[in-house]
Length: 340
Image (cartoon, rainbow, N blue to C red; front, side):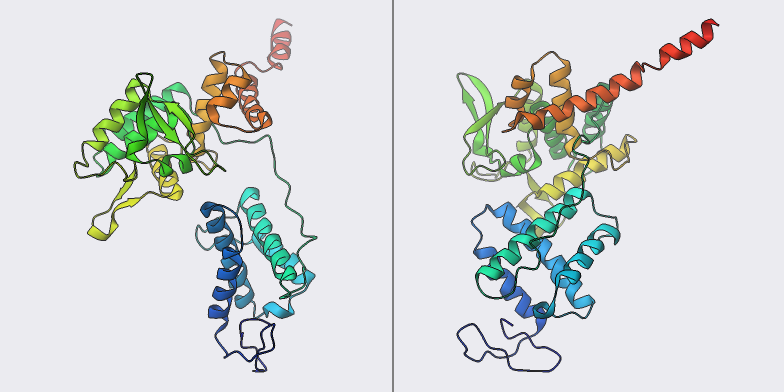
């Protein structure tokens, strides 16, 4: 037992040195334990946020089921995995995707590995396996007509933030950058390189802004129009910020979830209200457009910032799916039957 967690028998907790600790609530004890775990991880801030989110889900499940952290066994861990698979998320009300479930499982395994090394708990999660995923599936991409409709929906909207939203949609579509790369960008990251406008970005998994994407005229114009609405902004300010109705809500960096929500909002407006469409659909669209336009996989890989070419190859599955719909081989059978 660690951190003086009060159990049902109200025994006094001891820390690993043997000194007495005052009893605290489970919620507070779990928060302290979680803080120590997060601080010990040599990962970027985004990964730390993911670990924290995942472990809070685990601690919440323990408390709701009347369990004790220091009394859990492998069966409990397997039951938690079943919970992740079958029970809807309290945050969204929807079942979790295999990718989300596996992110939670990864965090749990890392936590128990850390706890075991520090003498807190036995590692009862090391045999926990990820759930199967369809590696070939990626989000649906948009057709050229849908892209134009999406941008028109942003441009012609009467919503308060439509100028900002248009700049975001245009940037994501024309550059293929990830949401996290967009929210990391600052105004001063818009520069010129050999006379051409570019945006310097911090790629996923990297610690420096050592890559750039060219800014084509339409995107540059959209960004400038948006920045004109922020005359008091400093070069070091985030490129995209919140524009809430209250002062406290204004000027804060957008989150990846915010950008995903913005994208889904306009997708619903143009009739793309399906789980197959998300913020990643814009990056998917860029990838498919590049490959269909005749660029090789290497060029597409570099444009998208993939470290592994196998990731880029996944987008070929989407193109194959479109070809199957547009020109199904089984149509030859229909032609044969018609000729008879």
